[in-house]
Length: 328
Ligand code: ADP
Ligand code: MG
Image 1 (cartoon, protein in one colour):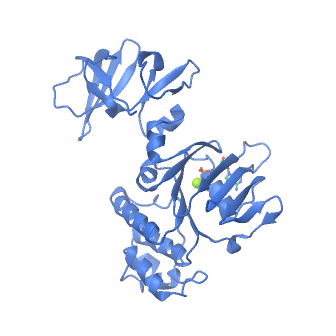
Image 2: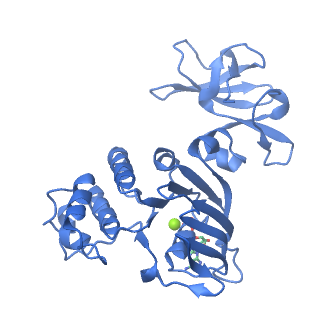
Image 3: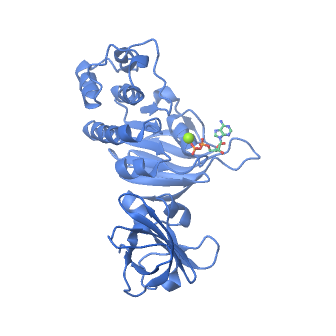
């Protein structure tokens, strides 16, 4: 039995609008870290709020640790669900110290040793007597997380937990969070619109689009075998090559414009090479990106975006022949 099972969840806020969540089903294993990703308005927050009990679905079931939370005949209120919830704006009590904030939740003060340990793990030791305005945004974020973890929830729900952090802080907070989750064996469902957060932290990802779960898989699976152009583009600029031009490609997807199938090729998967099937064209632009150069190449039928790490001289107007190497 999975720790969390959600089956066929749908929610429409207003009759005239499209459903915010539309027939979503997936499961989380105990201890698993799952990312819900997708663009703004794709239904991520609504789904999280339904699991937390802050919103009632029109259809579907939520089962946590074999206990039905939502079904046609059951509704367990939020405070009776064994879920910790951290929202985007991590609302700490401004007039309470860090320590008071952390031990506020039900049962959070029961095990001072565990609380102390969580504080150390989260890297906020020594800040216990400060007030929220006396610590940084990243530290506030971690206080909110420790507050949620201190109640020892079976399931931790996080809505864009890293969205307020600047890029430098983000990396270290990610690492610390992962350590915290693994060491406390917490099952985590976190919402992100940032593919990097999901790639770095999640065991599996659920890609949301227009209220539906478009693809569910490990980050590697979703990256290597996206089911659609939409999913492929989540990872950044992607070339879509008509499948007929890459007959041995291991993976192809339906073209968005309905003209057969295309093969997603990432910019870094190209090399300067005439190994067949090769693509020849004229260099339209060369942009230095530090770790690589981004080259746009106009071939007879396609405009390709290519990331080159080779130390060769390339200028706009040059003729160039490239081929790609794709994962099996
Ligand atoms: P996400 O978190 O992926 O950005 P949301 O779940 O917040 O998406 O929103 C999904 C859709 O539901 C959007 O179209 C949004 O406008 C709508 N929506 C969200 N909350 C409400 C609400 N309380 N009332 C009406 N519509 C809502
Ligand atoms: Mg949201």
